[in-house]
Length: 479
Image 1 (cartoon, rainbow, N blue to C red):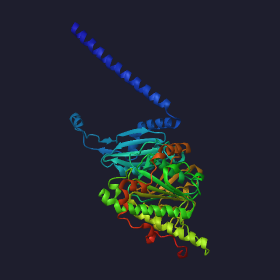
Image 2 (image 1 turned 180 degrees about the vertical axis):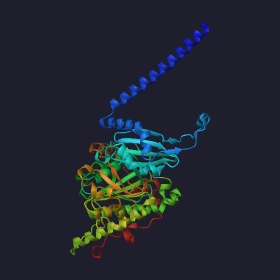
Image 3 (image 1 turned 90 degrees about the horizontal axis):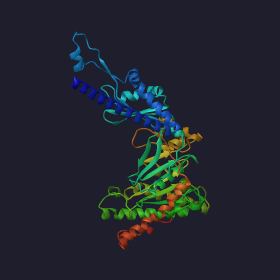
Image 4 (image 1 turned 90 degrees about the vertical axis):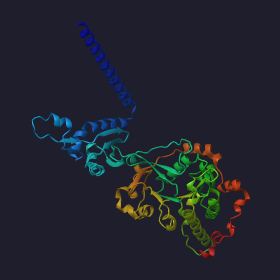
């Protein structure tokens, strides 16, 4: 009897210990949840409750939306327990759902079932948005047998964001982080093997800010060097690149003749690089080995590009000279865009309306990456993004003229069909100035780097480019 009592007391003590540990774990989890909730901002708190509602109602909602499967095969346990021979009731299987949250809404991962996969979830997206009280819902597949359901309660495009550069060397030389898409997911574009980018949009809607972020993120890398032609100003101190000029090996303003000299020099650099690339690196493209401090990626920014390319009408000598310069500028930039990719040269052209008179079509149409901020006309939207934008009215930049959409751009992203809208962040001038100041010592002329690396022999294979036909001084009479 005593032994039985001791056993019962031991079992009771062990049970009490288990219960106590369970209570401690419950209290700790509750405290963690409360602390996380109290530390969250108002938007995130709403998303926490939204995620709780999604979890609680999923098993009831899924069958209503035909996101469940019926299993008529009984389990082994059900078959053994069926002693009266009656038909066993089929089981309704509901996909397992794991839900997380952020400030904008919820992110749910669901396991697929036979007959319930990506297609079925995508068909139910509009109904999920209604049930979960979301502005929109998108369904994608991150791996076989699993789908990701992104629901946003608030439109991320209407909330301005701010970017603070880290000042660190980027992990990938040519990856451009753009901002957040309409589901608050980060968007980037890989500019490896990309010769040109076009950026269009009305004044004040974010073109220069977008480029400012690229400069802020890429400047800490010695494997990137910048040149700029800014058609808005006559001198650097007057415009948006006043702080950045110290991190650029070349800068020109709206003077067509000075711009022509810069473009000619870069074409000359392109030719020298093309001449020596294979012998030095034993590759056809610099991207096979990647840019380096000695052979950096050269980024030419042409802001307000129409300044340098627009046709000048008139028969007086001055106008004819401007027309000749503009035509020559277009030919030189065409050379860079069409032939500079393999030697590590990237051209970014920004303008308000990227029609053929602003950016010649033989340049614009060979730039693989294009994006547009707000536009006033369908013609401008088509010029910036192509005819396909007519088939995507929700993403058309003519719908971005509301001041709430300053900083929002549309683009055709290489990773997915159709067009997406992106909220690009604002980089305060103080932040970009700090990066420019701290990285100014990295500025180097790519031409000088080649000469320092290889000495006078860099010219051995090179023709006298200054006398080459297509680099001759523009002839005003030929315009």
